[in-house]
Image (cartoon, rainbow, N blue to C red; front, top):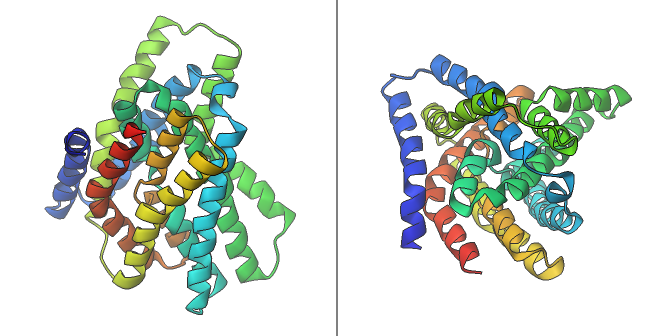
Length: 309
C-alpha cells in the first residue's frame, strides 16, 4: 500500500499544484478553460490515438469485460437513482446523481495514471471503460433529462446524440487509432514522433488542469456530495469487482484495471453536463471536489489490492 501510495503521490501532487495555482489566481478560470481545451482536443487525443493504434478491436472489445463493467456500473447507477427518488427529487436531478455516482475521471486521470502504474497493457481495458462511460451512460442521462423536461424523446435527439459522439475528440481519436491498427498501416517516423511528443503533454497538463478547475469549485450541498463520493469511490469499484471477478470471471489483469478505473473520482465532464442542463451543478461540483481529495487515499488502496490479485 505504501509503495503504491508513493507511486501515485506525484500524480496528485501535480493536481495539488494546479489547485494552488488556481487559488492564488496565477491560473484564473479563463486560463484553466484554455488549458483544458488543449488537453481535450490535442494532447489527450494524441495519447489515445497512440494507444489505440497499437491495439486491435479484439484486444479492445471483450464481451465479458464489457458486460462486467456495464452490470456493475448499472447497479451503482440504479442505487444512485433510487436513493435520489426516495428523497423525492425530480427525475432529472435523480438521473444527475446516478450519473455522478458512477462516472469516473477516466480520460484526464485514468488513462495517463493507470497506464503508467499498471503497464502499457492497461491501455485497452481503460479505453473500453472510457468508451462505455461516454457512449452508454452520458447518452442515458441525456435521454432521461429530455424525457423528464419535454415528456417525450424525439428521433432527432438520437441524431444529436450520435453527432455529439462523432464530435467528441476522445471517441474520434480512439476510432481513428483502431482503424489505423485494423488496416495494419505503418506509422511514419515523423508522425509517430509528433504523436508521442504531443501525447506526452497530456499527463502533466491534464493533472494540472484538474487541480486548477478544482480551485473554482465550492463545497456546497455537502451531505449529498458525501454520499455521491462514497458511491463513486467505494460502491462503484466494489460492484465492478463482484461482476468482474465472480460473476463474469474476466481475465485477472483486465479485471484489475477495470476495478482501478472504477475507483477513480467523479469526472469533470459530469459538471459540464450538470451546468449545461442546469441540473444540480453545486451538488456535482462538491462531489468532484470531495471525491478527488479523498481519492488520494482510496485510489492507491484499490490499486494496491488489484496488483496483489
